[in-house]
Amino acid sequence: NYQLHAEWRWPAGPGNSGIFLHLNPPDTVWPLCFEAQLLAGNAGELRLNGGSQIAELAGSNLKSIPRRQPSSEKPCGEWNSCDIVCRSNTITIHVNGVLQNEVAGISVNSGAIGLQAEGAPVEFRHIILNQLPDTF
Image: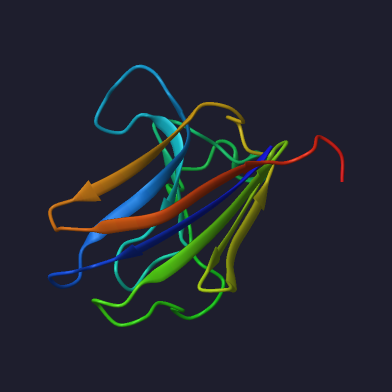
């Protein structure tokens, strides 16, 4: 049970990045985890990597849960914020204060956190991880 705050920006133009949640071995290109997508223009989507599942969608071929709202990202070069809460079997993702995703019934609820980059420079700052109490 934790809350993660991270800020990111694209210093040289739009790119693709993400925050891996509940990252588990083995070390592969798409490891078992969930990904809070930071792809420019699509931040807030939740990707299901390496066979991770959400109970209500179990057995489907769905690889991602689209964001709920239109893009809440700032223009390239400006700092964005992502606030993620992982509690028990749920994940919520806010991008710049806007709720973009919320899912329950996740198949993987522990593991490492990873910062990912694909093909373009991305900068992170103000990464804050706080443990949450087990009860509300």
